[in-house]
Image (tube, rainbow, N blue to C red; front, side, top):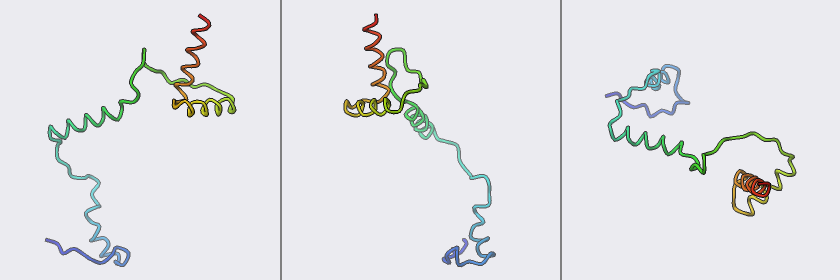
Length: 102
């Protein structure tokens, strides 16, 4: 078993530093295959990470729109007051307009 060097890295000379950090020279980190339990937990974590917002209606689609900055600030302020997201506020506004024009 190697003796551990208790000297801080910044006080070592080049030879001592090279010896102390030799274990980090390898590009590959030795690993073992995942167990069934580890694989299951990894899949659950991946699914949870990409879950996002639950689909409403036919699901959602991102859109890029241009809006005057002052109007956007007012919309954000109203969304905060109502406790909703900007997207929900805009969607509700569009639904209202579409319902009235039908």
